[in-house]
Structure formats: C-alpha cells, structure tokens
Amino acid sequence: MLAMIQNCIPKLLTTFKCSEKFVWTFFDSVLNWSPQKGTHTAVKLPADTKAKCEECFFHLVYIIKWYSVPPKLVVGFDQIGNYVLSSSGTTFAERGSHQVDIVTKDEKHAYTLLVASMPEGTFLPFQQVWGGSSPQSLPSVHAQGMDEAQANGFDFTFAKSNKRGSHFSTLKTMKEWVEHIFKPYCCYVIEVDPDLDDNQILIVYLNCYPVHMSQEFCSYIFNEYLHVILCFVPASCTGIFQPADVGLNHIIKHHLKQHQTEYLVDLHQKQMDSGLTAEQVKFTTSLPVLRDASVAGIMAVYDFMMGQFGCELVQKSWEHCQVKDWNLSAKCLTNKAAQMALNEYLRSHHILHDEIENQMGIVHGVKQVQLNTAEADDDADVPSSAVIQDALGLDVQVDIPVDIDVISHCVESTEKGPDNTLVAAGEDEDIWAYINFN
Image (cartoon, rainbow, N blue to C red):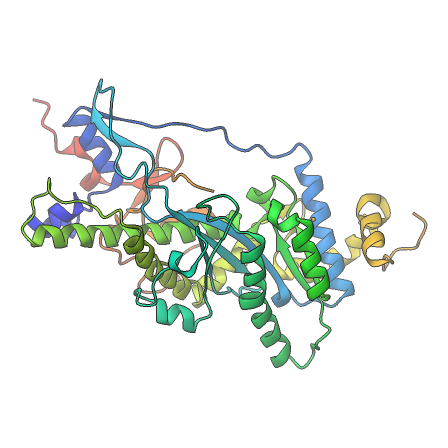
C-alpha cells in the first residue's frame, strides 16, 4: 500500500503514514477481512526466579571484586533469529474464507545474530550465522555495506550444523566468535590500559543454551583461554536477567524490520515505475538477494549502537536486569554496598559458597566455617524512539541521533493497543474518522 501511495499520491504521506493500525481497520471496515493467526504459550518464569538471579548477581560480584575485573571486560551476549523476509504468519482475507494463502509463510530462511555488550556501554561487532556448510551460504562480497561491515570487524559465518539448514549457533561458530570478535576486543582493552596485564581475568555472561553448556565448548574455553570465566544466566530467566533480552534485542530487531520494510517498499515501487501494475508486482523470495540485503540493515543497526545514544541504551539494558535491591549495571556490580552484602550472602547461602570453593579452591572474604522466530504483529511503522522508550523507559528527546526517526513510513504519535503493544495514534490513521455512516 505504501508503494502504491508513493507512486500515485505521494503528497498524501505528508501527514498520513498508512500505519499498521490503518491497514488493519481498512481491511476490517472496507473489505470485511479479518486476521487469523496461531498462538503459543508464553514461557513462565521459575518459582525461584528471584533467588536464582540474586545468586547469579553475587557470583558476578565475587569474581569482579576478588579478581579485579573491570566492567569493560564483563562481556554478555545473546543470539537472536531474524527472517530474511519477515512474516507474522498472518494475512487478511474475506470473512468466512477457508483456504488462505500467506505470502512468505513458507519462506523460513533466517539467520542468527550474536549481540554482545558490556555493562559500561560498549557494543561489539555482530556475528551473523547462516545455515549451510560452505562460504556459498554467506552474503556475497559485493553486498551493500559488506566492505564497511568487514572493516568494523563483523564475522560472517555458516553453522555447518548436523541439522540440515539450521542457522543456530554451533560449537564451530562459537569458537569463531571467541577468536574473531571476543579475543581481539579483550586484547585491545588490555593493551591500552596500563592497569591490566596479560593474565587479566575476563568474564563471559551467557545463556544456558546446550551449545554453551556443552562439554566441548566449556573444555575449549578452559584449555585455550585460561583467564576466561563463564557465568551463566539462570535457566528460563533471560527475560529479566539477560541484558540483550531485557532491552537490546527488541530494539535491534525493530531497527532491522524497519530497514527491511524500506527495502521492500523501494523494490515494489521500482517494479511499478517499470510499468507493472500492483497486481503484477512480486516480492522477491530469492535467498541470495535477500541475504545480501541483510548486510546493510545490520550495518545500520551497528552504526546506531556505536553512537552515544546507543551506549546509553546498552547501559540501561544492563541496569534493567534487576533483582531485589540489585541490578547488573557497572555501578551496582562494583559498588561497596554490593561487595559488603556479598560476604553476608556467602555465609548464609552455601550453594554459591560451595560452587566457588569447588571451582576456585578458596572463598575469599568469608571465614571457612560454613551459571527465537515468528514475529509479532508488524510494528515497523512505529518510530524507533517510541520502541526504545517503551522498552527501557528512556526520554529519547535528548541527544537523540538525528536519523533515528526519519524513516518515511513511521507515524508521528503512538499509543498502547489492546494487547499492550504500540500502535499508531491520531485521526490521520483512524479509518473510522473517514467513514460517513449516513
């Protein structure tokens, strides 16, 4: 619809943005179409979530305190899946329809993006993982943004999984991330900081995924990187104690979705400019084409995250990992109150005490008396600033990058919809305001 309006009446988009809200109500009120989609059960938090997260917090505090680990060497990462051609599994059809074809429903091609950051605000280059078993499965060297991505240290790799076509991280890709992204970053930090040496302890904060907890990966770290300590996000608690899950992932995926929408609108409009009618226009489902198109999107996200505002988002994401009086911000992980509370916690919680003793031989500071992929509704019309504010509670009107909200199809104002997600607000996007019921 956006491409057709831009092609026929572009001035209409000065105030009207053809938002997701407008499209849904247009289908409902004018065409008598209704949406249908499947549902799934949400993951529930464990009953002992607070206890598990508090134990995780003090585990991190212990290592940071007794091994003098600066927050810039506490590296947390998560992996997010992203379709090369997004589909919510939903379409519109006339009410009562029994067989409905969904465009891109069977296009399951996706990639995994490894998102890594530190509590003090540093953001690492992406690793993009594709299904397949050879370099032919990767974006081409001629893809838009590839030169810039490689210059910034991105790692493009293939999973070579035992499961055919899987793009999820494997032992191979995890080793490559350690060697191509994690190690160069840590070596640089140690090299430029006179207070650090080659024996500096490093922390990797990661999820309890099978590949991360496998004997092969843990042995690889233990044997090849003696100064790296693996700390695991409590199982099933990533929604409240994994910084990427708490704040960054939604913002990053929203940015990617907006870039993809712009790409598809431009592709649609070029076909119409060539003389095709709206009915003749087809969205490409060519994997090589869409794979190459993904590079510019992740490069744009990285540029945003590397700015001052991106740094603040990273800090807020760690800070929003909260349990009781504590959170994972650099300030809280290193402050005196947390360190004093640590000693008391170890005296009264023998599980963590014994775990530290078994792994490190001694417990300092205590007398010895006692570790995705179908998308939701398409919200690419919602400004990134609104998504950021909703996710992290930030006032994005201060020091915001000038280009974050200039996506042409974004609406000017938003409100919470019936399902508590952001939707367009204002009469311009309300089709009921245009209908004459007389």
